[in-house]
Image (cartoon, rainbow, N blue to C red; front, side, top):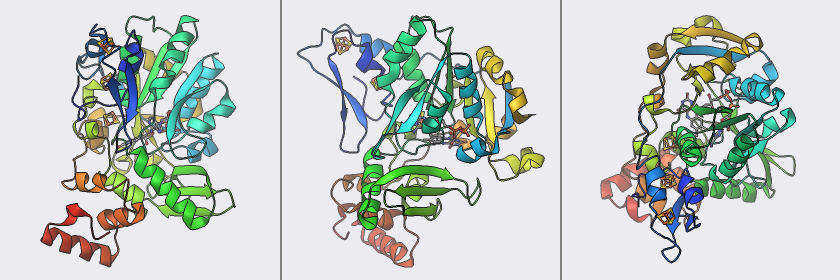
Amino acid sequence: MIPPKDCSGCGACVHICPVRAIEFVKDREGFYYPEIDCEKCVNCGACEKKCPILCPQGPKAVHTAAYAAQNRNEQARHCSSSGGVFSLLAEQVIRLGGIVIGCAMTKDCYGAEHQVITNEQGLSEIRGSKYLQSRADQVYPAVKEALQNGKRVLFSGTPCQVAGLHAYLANAKTENLITIDNICHGVPSPTVWERYVKHWESVKGSKVVSVQFRNKEKGWKTYSLVLSFENGETYKSICTADLYCRGFVGDYFLRRSCYDCHAKGEYHGADITLGDLWGIRHICKPMDDDGGTSLVLLNTAKGEALFHTINREMECQQVDFDEAIRHNPSYYQSSSQRVNRHCFMKHIQKKPIINLLDFYCGTRLTSRIKRKIMKFMATACRGDHL
Ligand SMILES: Cc1cc2nc3c(=O)[nH]c(=O)nc-3n(C[C@H](O)[C@H](O)[C@H](O)COP(=O)(O)OP(=O)(O)OC[C@H]3O[C@@H](n4cnc5c(N)ncnc54)[C@H](O)[C@@H]3O)c2cc1C
Ligand code: SF4
Ligand code: SF4
Ligand code: SF4
């Protein structure tokens, strides 16, 4: 089977196996990996033949056009990570009688999972980025069933999840399926996130009831992480100061496959790719209002057709593809693994997460001095000092 460092956790194999011999099991870093029950396995080989990493389908994204776009509904744009284009596409599919599948936080806010949404009110659950790996495979059978019943389906996820869905659907009829993926920095460990939420719950003495990873109160470029608690309190911090966000952006606790991603560049397999138009100041100055602008890449005729049905609901301007992605290296390049990632991950189950994050990612002078000393003494890996 596939080496764990390459497995993206798409979960296609779990549902492809005809005898249900594959279980999805969390490893000590908190990521799901397939495990085969050799007693049940009949050696049919389907899991390997259909795995999108072991048997890649080849390049898919042939760019017809790139756009800068903003949802004209300011409230929806404000609650979205970028320009709120996902919401417009999702609303359109629901208006056409279809269903939408995207990533939501679990009820306890400790994890993320893909959910099926059937009405516009439900879209708030899947709006906005969640910076931890979501479990998407559980909804693949619902996608297949909806397609078999002639329903239109919009599926949104990371590029590897879209690849997983396509692998699972294989020979099914997919003319009613439209897929959206995102420009992807990588997905953080669900265990690090869970322990971080629990840390703040103990500080505030109350349960977290909602999470916003990309709050725009201070602007799109200076976004904040906001945790809301049952007792009415909040924790708010701009991303550059929050320890979890610093660890995510600093690449300390991404899934191992994200450091050598197989779904970058022309290997994006969705009809539409969405991202942040970070280069807006250079590319499209008149739209640079710091409220959030989406970079929309139309990869197929199907994606192009859906996108143009929402023309009247957005501010939109065609931009140069090469220029746009030049400011967004995650489109074509994997994040770099930190040399001390394994030291960090080794301790996430046992050491207080806040101390670990502070030691590796903290900006305080004491943290920086400690890092320097540990580097000098080459004992950082032991983590005994935390
Ligand atoms: C983990 C992650 C890393 C990203 N990295 C980059 C990057 O490096 N550069 C860049 O330009 N853009 C990146 N994006 C994409 C960007 O943040 C926006 O999601 C995208 O531009 C769409 O924004 P929107 O305003 O149109 O809609 P939004 O409403 O903000 O987008 C929500 C959509 O994102 C999906 N989503 C949210 N969280 C997850 C998750 N954990 N797993 C799978 N799908 C999820 C939802 O299903 C929903 O469809 C990343 C997104 C995620 C989730
Ligand atoms: S199908 Fe997906 S989950 Fe299964 S081994 Fe391949 S990448 Fe991993
Ligand atoms: S070889 Fe066939 S039976 Fe065995 S785990 Fe893979 S899909 Fe299942
Ligand atoms: S970086 Fe690649 S492997 Fe990691 S979540 Fe994104 S698409 Fe999947």
